[in-house]
Structures are given as C-alpha cells and as structure tokens.
Length: 136
Image (cartoon, rainbow, N blue to C red):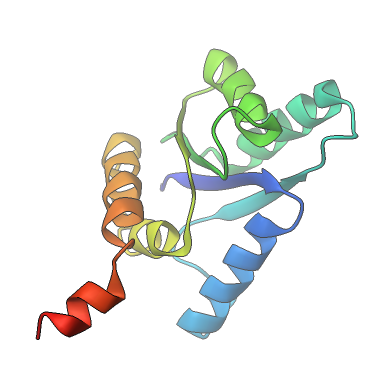
C-alpha cells in the first residue's frame, strides 16, 4: 500500500507537472498513484468537491492521500479544504516541480512524512542561481 497523490490546480498546471515528471523519469508508470483535478473558477464548486472526493476514493489504499494545490485561498485549495473535513488527507499549497520530484522519490513513506518531504522539497527547490554561481 502507498499514499496516493492528488494534484488540485488551476486549469492544466497539475497535468503539466505530471507530464513533466513522466518525461523526466522516462515512464508513465510512477512509483505512487497520482491523479489530477483541473479546476476552473467558472464551474460549480459542489461538482469539484464531489469529483475530488471520488478521486480520493480511487487513490486511497488505506494510507491516505497527499493533496497538492497551487495557490492558498484560491478555488483549488478551497476544494482541498473540503476534503480535509471528510477524508484522510494532508494538503500542501504552493505545489512546484521540485516538490513533486521529492515526493515521488519516497514511495514507501507514510502520509505525514510525505507531507513533510513536500514542504522541504518545495522550499529547497527555490534557489537564487545568481548567488549560487557568483559565490563559487
């Protein structure tokens, strides 16, 4: 059993992240189950809440689901907030590619550990390259 990953993002952000991850790893088969819920602001939030719960049910193998959203306070994060009240999830906002790479690297970790890895990967993946290159 493993933790599932649900990307709830505006439009195609989550799909693009997932596709980039598959290209980088050279496979469509990833070590963790991942699903994407693209959200648009002009669609009924109740429909997204329902769809998010259905995706959770399909991803949850008993270990829970790590939900990654793009922007705190926006509709995708609000949909994730709906799941917090109903499902065994950890929600991390501010998804970026380094965060996703870090999470996928630890497929055997539990939900809380993966949430911590997501936070550290997201933060540690943001670097001032000019300063790094100029300090050498």
